[in-house]
Length: 359
Image 1: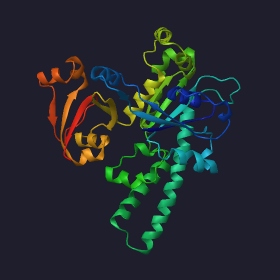
Image 2: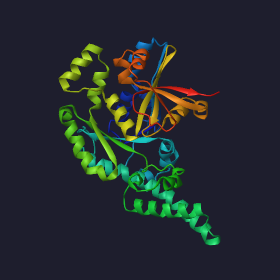
Image 3: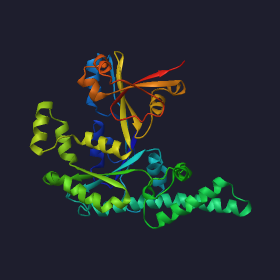
Image 4: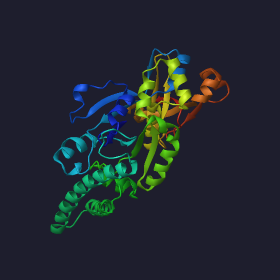
């Protein structure tokens, strides 16, 4: 999973990046228009528990790569570096996390106004996509004027015209109602406003207690744009991250914070992308594997290894909750909680799988 962090200068975006990835800021890189990259593990206590029960020699968690892109200012999409650096880096991102400033900052040219900043950034993404769509639309129109269009070209032309109208209306492509085959016609363009968007509202310490209500208010305002919103304070989270475990728990309890920002952003990102995790466990390793909601046992086999999908026979399935409650496979088998499922079985979050295959 690959998530691009975007935001205006002084939004706290890079602080959020370091919080999410556990990396240290590099003073030498602070004023460079470069994209920072880091891969971090997705915390999963189920992996820890299963690893303990199976006496696994190795624990492997799912991972996410974060990109911290240069700060975006109004009119950025009209500048050459936008296409060369910013949008180019983000084209392969699975989702975007937009960090917006919800705190006042001494010396800032403007006061904090999250709705304004969200609209500004979204306008830049929409304008960038419109340039791409218009170029392809114009080229395709020239082609169909000199020869009869193929069925695929007709489909693409229709989708491009709908996408163009959506963007000209100032609306992101993520909320354009398209069928699966129509979405495929746009997939190759890797359009920015089509990507799932999580808004990270970066708040001051004194407004942290209202984070939930502030995030809900913002969610209501931008629900039509298909955005999810969470609130946090990067400054407070940085303090929390630097504490010892016992101190951290006390500090978080005092603030009424039950989860770290890292965990909440990761969970929100998983939900945004429609992702979940299934598990495998044994004495060699216990591992969490990412899979999309609605995918099947044979899809899960393919996530582990393509050969398992090709030779798939059955999946042995038991849920994590049952596995822990009954003390492992023997107890689950005794109570009939281990099932054999076929290719069409829809995998659930927390399923523990053993793939039976030929070859």
